[in-house]
Amino acid sequence: EIEIGVVAPTGFFDPLGLSTNIDAETFEAYRASELKHGRVCMLAVIGYIVPEVFRFPGEIAPGVAFADIPNGVAAIEAVPSLGWLQMFFL
Image 1 (cartoon, rainbow, N blue to C red):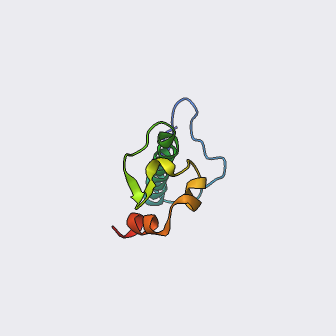
Image 2 (image 1 turned 90 degrees about the horizontal axis):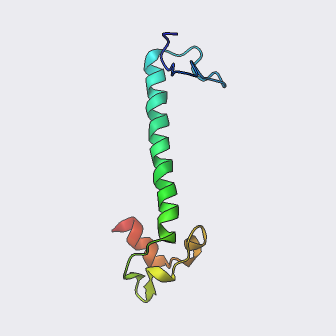
Image 3 (image 1 turned 60 degrees about the vertical axis):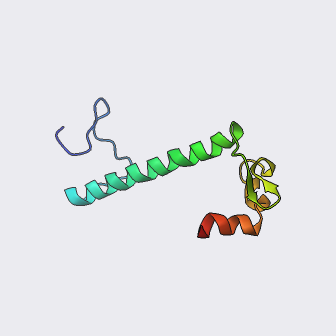
């Protein structure tokens, strides 16, 4: 097959039909979006795994060390408001 998106040995794989009735420019935009989302997901996985092995020295806020913040989703509630201000506004 000589269509865009064909990869050996599977051939053209589009089980949901997302590339049906679109032009090459739209297909390229979809492909670029897929790559961007994949890269963001890889960074998110690294951000979830690295704290299990390494912690930054110092404090996230006055009196709260990085080591005191739990891993995973529990960290959302443990970060004080001053720590959130640091992350978003500095």
